[in-house]
Length: 159
Image (cartoon, rainbow, N blue to C red; front, side):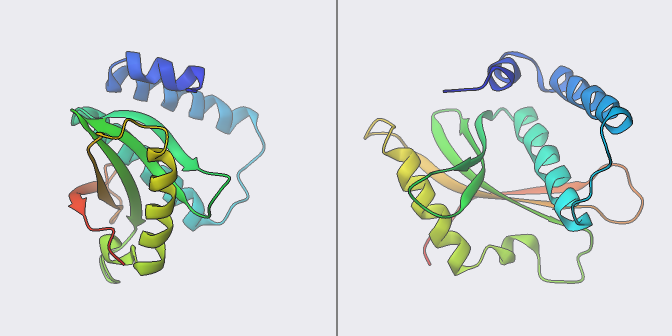
């Protein structure tokens, strides 16, 4: 079952949705207490949001964010349709290219967890459903306002 904001997001163009979300974030920063999570968590969440809007601009219809199953460990950052292919998407965010690239950070353990959660999600899909695993790398480098985003389609889930 989709939440009302997810249904709304599917119906609105990505630009309008982004403007609404940014406005709500602006109001929340002024009204709610400060975010006490570690910086890396906040940057990771920001990267997932950028990836979400980037994929929407590319034509993906995102149907789930941070999907978890009560039957297994792990989560899938984004799930969406790229035309008639269901995509399970892992987002990795970095502030520098000095360390290993984000797509290399999706190690064997993480791939196993994603595969397990994806199998659980697919249990509720038609048997003929085509699917793939994508990795989105988000780089925040320097003081630029816009991140650099790379999409690696059809990455392997083989451990």
